[in-house]
Length: 196
Image (tube, rainbow, N blue to C red; front, side, top):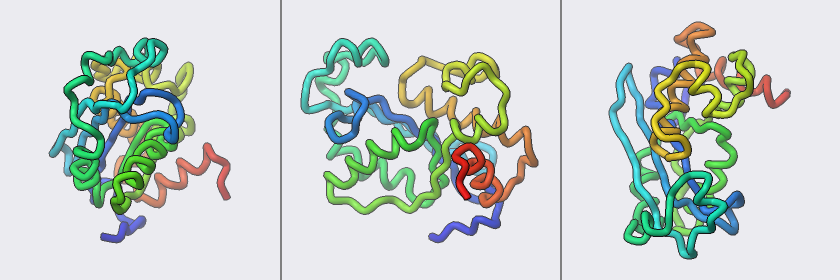
């Protein structure tokens, strides 16, 4: 499917996703939790959530960030057993993440390691869009959850953060014409990057 950027964002499924990882860099760290929520025509039509077993023990510094322990992932599936399911879940959707380059970097490495084809997506970053449209103390997801009074769930857990990310997008759309075209939303996102 090709995306027609003249169409409304609501003409396509939106999948907000988040990763929790064993470190900061995708070439040396791994995804240990993957969560996503799929929204289409005004309602949630799908959910994806799984812990993932890393190849190495988690370090205390990372455990402090997300609270995911070695015991929690000891019996979790391996990424190679879940990545195809995730790719199918997000295929042909507008894919949304908060600080999208971070999460997309980890997913690109996982997809390549497992010899899969990248899903067909149009990618958006709720952090970049919020920087243009929302006046908040900062644009960290937990700050946005608090200041916009969103449903936050458990901080730094993949599904809850993915759902919060989706809510941030909707708050941003409220600041504009809610039925924006994909082209208009991409232009808003570019403003923060100073793209030409």
